[in-house]
Length: 487
Image (cartoon, rainbow, N blue to C red; front, side, top):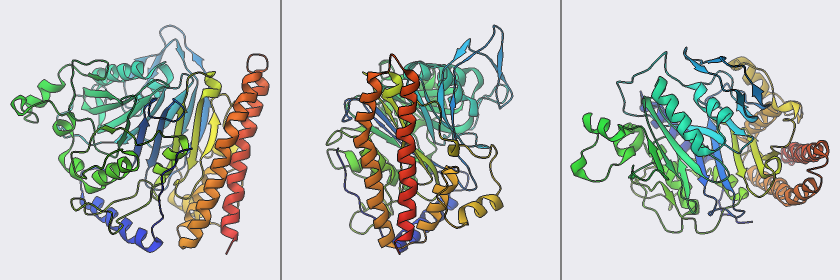
């Protein structure tokens, strides 16, 4: 297993710098800076030949995250899908089974992994568009869901998303959607209104995004790697955002909100993530590359460690042109995942959704193969966004490792650990490595056993995979309790 070394900064330093990050973000009035973060590892850049997708979903409390396994559905001819923004769409004759990480009440925070391995998540990336064309209120929440329920490949998902944006108009300022499958990963950049551009992550490289568009110079004639709405260049030229005489079309420079593109929180987080993996040093600043070749191939544990990155403003590590470095995970991270998208195995075994509830800084990644019948009962709670009073009562209560309430247990534990000193965090790091390393070591024997009976006893396969997930889940609960009791 490849690993990258990361150290934990002092709790006091974390609080001081986090306060600075919040203060700067507050000063950015009119520029949303929710601190989500995403990673795509190309199949030739990963240790096992899979495409890896990592994502931290950051949203302000109060929140809850529910996990569902949706079955295939069929619909009669003429059926229509009502969109949340007011329009409607022809229903597909059949939709695919999906794993769904749901955040009730949030329009742009859900994530999906479908039965073909198509994975969809997103990062808020404000655009400079101020004249959007919208039909029937545009499309927002439904965009990722329609892609997940209907696409069999990432490219199919990108083209479908593009058609939806061109038909209805994108209802928010801007966003980068990660749309990946076991063969390739794409960054789909939606712009407020009817324009979009998507770029493929090279198979031997790693790409990351932190709340501003990262797709830079592109060749629109190369449809193997870049897809876009037809007038993406002409429109930017007409608005004065791009001058053809200046050189090759740069998407981010043309369409990103300038304040978001230059925000040190966004620059610092992308630079920090890329620094973990790059084979050559990167100069921090607004001209970071879309993707880099890693110095060594990445495994699931490496992506987890990047998503856990919590170093902030450490002396001696900061480039002069970045005034501070904000963490990739924070107290606002409500859920995190690593999607391991492999070929060469039945999809029930080759697709694994490693899920962390609450911030991965204090939490544990629990693996769920697509072949499980569903998530444990504790991974689904109330169906509405909780009130602040309810959230605070659950999170601030005495810690009880109740397997029936996954989100609240992990969130409660985060609350307790955020009040602890460095020694407590070091104990937790030991427990995280132990639980997750054991899960990774056991994964292959479990899959081998499931593979031997896959064609003859699917029920046994399901039970085996569910017991594997449940064992890691319960081990995480025990590790949290042990960490808090060692005082």
